[in-house]
Length: 191
Image (cartoon, rainbow, N blue to C red):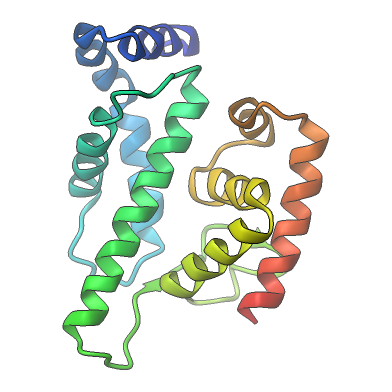
């Protein structure tokens, strides 16, 4: 089992331009990236064409292009990975929708295993339109970018309150407060 410090040290070295650090890093973080991808895809429609490995590979290619990233810790890395995976899936959903030529079937994000998002009992909701959620988060980002980022890190990235606070460089209480406010806003927006 790898330590958080080891991953953080490799991220810092990679951020400083050490390509060998990237070679050592990827085997250590691959299983967590695959878990994130699996979480995303479990929420997708059943006949989704992307598999967790393909999603991880696409995210990996985007991650290694982050040449100017100043990696601070593993939580930040996983937050960026989660953001990239979300963008890949949204792009995929848009392409799927365009291929359907405006058909009524939308890309659906199953949220049965995600718990609670803003009072919406996600376990009771069979699926949520990924594009509608993405658009709502984009709108939230205009109103309050920090709240949007917290939702992305917590809901999509699976980060804890503590990890989210670490990534954003804010206090634990601020994350909890903004998380509650963002969930309430999203609940109203998506209902």
